[in-house]
Image (cartoon, rainbow, N blue to C red):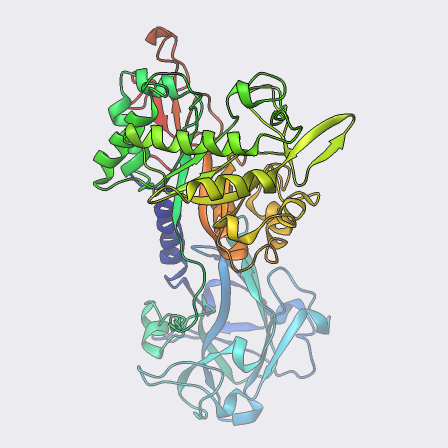
Length: 539
């Protein structure tokens, strides 16, 4: 079992291992299609080509003085051109040629199609250990290697996966220059004479040096995890829930488990039958207490202006006409005590999930300040937060309060709430990302880059989002949140979820016959289990 972070690290290491291997193509000068002015030597060791009749200028002048090669490269990449050659007794009068200005068939009379190589009579390398560059000091009369791409800088020889087979041409200039072979080698590598002679790998570039400045610190990472807030009963009732717990908690090495606050003064200790099991199994699987983050979707209906937990509404008002902030604070105090009695201890808490979002499911609206909109009076989030904070100081170890956990950053939402908050009443800044981006991790950069000035001294938490369904792009979003926004915690919304989009662990309805389970990929070991780990995260 590997987390998404581990899998991406493996992917990068595989990519690096491919690019770290030198690509090498060697071909004999006489192996091409030679124009009629080229002659092949009678020598067997080595066989080589030379031109009949000297030339000058900046192009080969006619097709008879061109040699054409079909070169197939092993992998895509950028290459440099090497040549093994011998300058004749005329020295600097026997030491020039042309090579094509890029791949493809060239016009023999068009200067722009050719790169001029002149002056080979005073450069080159022949010792086995010599690294072949565009320099050297060798003269005429011996076989030697030169990096033509460095000696006479021309085009970049770039090869793509769709163009591995290329046409390459050389053109003759002065006679007396003998050509034995050519090599295309990976541009980032260096090659010694022995490598070029024997067709062996060169030397890779030195690895980058990464320095760590221990005096420069960034955010402290407090938790990475996901939520089990809806479909809780499905998980508890699932016949393979122990395997699900193992993969959700240990498989992801979860360090932040988000739960909903479903305490409603039900009058029973079993008011939330699922959360204690989630926590106890997380503790068991992880081998230590799981850090729990709890959000409230709504206070009890008795504290709501609409008399129900759903469909928005706000806090009720008391007999004096003010909003029931004290009652709301007591509700949170009683919730924490009740959850603690069931073995659920909170590390962080949010007094209201998405206080800016009216939903048909459990929800409650708090505006940044008390106000009236379309004839409806709304309670203040900041005043509710102050009241809860003051009440929780009566606990020996109160959870860290995160605020305001609004639905998004954009449209002035997070800054609008933050502007009214008392910095002493909460620990860290929390928000969601709905409406802040699209289907890619980078599409959120504008929004998350704007958070830096929102309580810059406090830790920041992205506490709910799961709508980037491609898991690689989801990993990019997590990376950007950690690096650009500098969040201390990131919570993926759907840790365990039905369907095929977004859930890190996807489950079938355990109350349906197993014969109807369909969302497990056919042929996988978990097909009969009705659950599977999302691709790029799973087994």
